[in-house]
Image 1 (cartoon, rainbow, N blue to C red):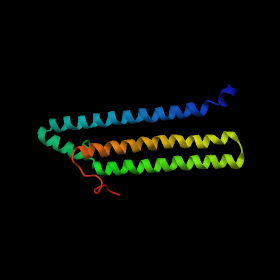
Image 2: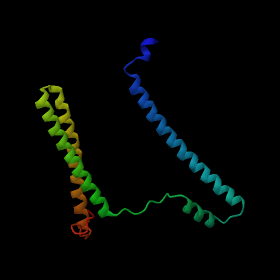
Image 3: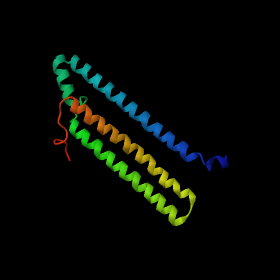
Image 4: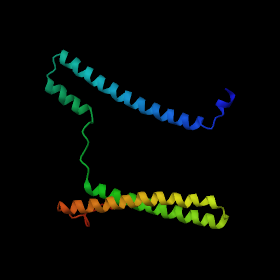
Length: 149
């Protein structure tokens, strides 16, 4: 029993259990909210409130419908994310190489390798940005001048 308390796996297992608990709690909360809304509708029907009025009241009280996304704002956010991730990848790579040059410790190159992950994600965002640009121009939207900065 004493060895189990100091097991190196206790932190990852506890972390996974915590994440699982949060997910289950979120799902339970959503189910409970739907149950309560349903019971509220039934109670209103029992009191004689017309169905159209109930639907109108429920649609006002819940924000289930999402507002329309502005494609130009999405395009600007994608471009911004790409630039931040590319810059972060380059910065981490340079930092890792400089740290290796100073310390001459080979495992420090892991820092430079971590920069490649950010570079790859940033490149993916840049590809997505270009695909969105082509798609918007195919629909006749002029995106160069109207892009939010």
